[in-house]
Image (cartoon, rainbow, N blue to C red; front, side, top):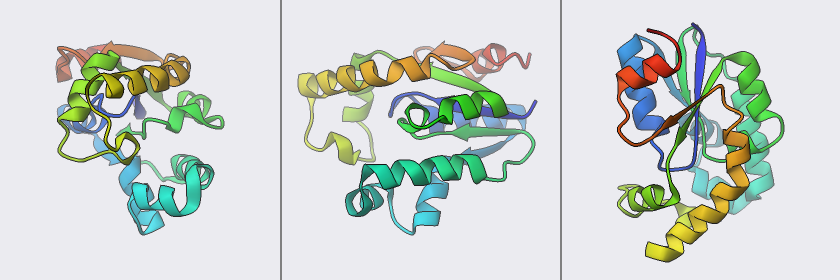
Length: 168
């Protein structure tokens, strides 16, 4: 089958569902954020703070395109990755893409209760957080919707994911 890239806003479940989907299919799982942190020798937040967004986006794109992916792999991408350079086009040309779609309110609830804080959301809660997500999602969704498949992040299951990517 090849590569399946999971795209969507932070908090939509790309990493957790990616792991479950990979396990369900007997595929490898790669989280590009982890590869980026290993290559940068720092967390994404630290890299972002010391080098800026432009350098981060260049490194992120380079890692996407130069990683040696095993044959059957589920790849979790960063929330902004599809929105820069030709990254979405590159992913569509090298595998299948799956957009995990959630409403701003659902994303806000997940992100507010997340175990790992997201630096970009520093101090935002409730309505302020939902408004921030609405604004960012409006910028990004045009890229996400270029994915081969879109699935609602509500009531998801490994079986539904497998069906959506046509592996049943």
